[in-house]
Length: 432
Image (cartoon, rainbow, N blue to C red; front, side, top):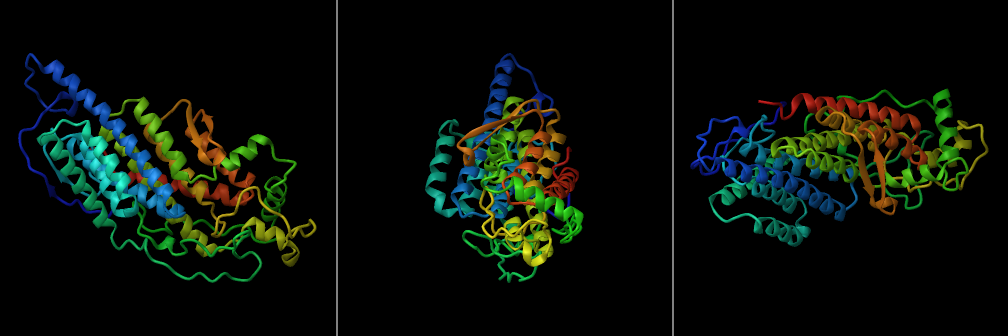
């Protein structure tokens, strides 16, 4: 693993409960079968608890200010703390940030909940009251005693280590981005004409990459080039609000993927980790790798966006006569189906995340079988997919159908994301 240090954190060490599940020798007494059943039941509940707190985390980030990059950072931090806490008890993998020392019978449920709660409360203090209630509700179902206390302590120790590791990671940096008034260059987009969002995000310290520029793609198609004209004509037709060439299903897909990538892709992780009854450490590792790859995908995307400065389709189409890049007449009222987000086009952040997510989930979970995702931005519609690659395919198309990203931005973004996902898999939480 790259430059993340293992921080020894000691939680009181007493008698350990050992089991064959953890690969340890056990004195199998008359009551051991019943004890094993209880232990297996607790592990299953711990996996469900990890899924529950993933949902709570996404609810919390959704309630905060709109910032896809900030959301991915928060989800990565929560997932890192949960992983290190659970892995400390049920350890099969190298720790991510902290080597937590705890008793072997510490409550996995308490550890997962405490880790997620502590990180979220620190990042979203305005949600503390709701988060405290969620935490209390989780703990209510755990018998009082040393196991519960040790679990809480392990979770809080893991959370503190993650919070400390991300201090000074440049996520709070802000710069004033001055748009370049030239053909091909990004400018604030209608209707709100908002300034560029998180213009400094490409310099945030990655979770697994060496830097945000590690997989920086080549420049986008030049104005007037065959590729540019192809992308221009496609999105001008299919991406406009009242398009006659876009189907109803394509319209729904575009609206479906207005929701942020973490909100949608984490649903796949929840379904599969619970349905397959993965042990808690393995389940926590799925969330960890998905969300740190997703966070690094946003850093990589933002690095390229603010180096390339590519304009959005709405700007290009409304100003086509000024740069001579379109054979079609000037259309100063052209409006995309969905509202254009306030940052440069190339590469498409949603598809960089998609490439990272499909790479990680395919490697960890293989042939997933049918998975489903529900989107709040498409009136609660649920889409079903045969593979995680089919999910990524839809993302690439949806951003074009919505009129907010050029085709090249979407396809190149996906390839960048695949590279990001491969690095996360190679460097993070390897098997011991």
